[in-house]
Length: 66
Image 1 (spheres, rainbow, N blue to C red):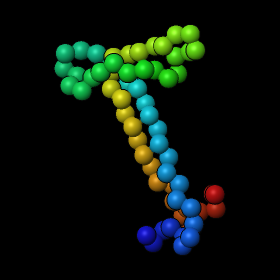
Image 2: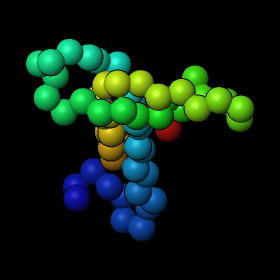
Image 3: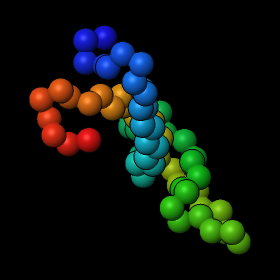
Image 4: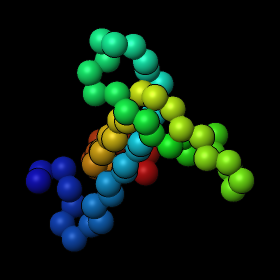
């Protein structure tokens, strides 16, 4: 790729989000474990959609941000 430096690391970021939705018209809903509200003594599940996003972090040559 043109933006990746040769021999440099490739950084892939993954995010998983639970969108709480209910109703007859929500097509792909399911019961998912809510990692934020779950503790060692109690597991919390919600009806909704599970979104998994992946992003490739690329350093831009014209940006001063690392």
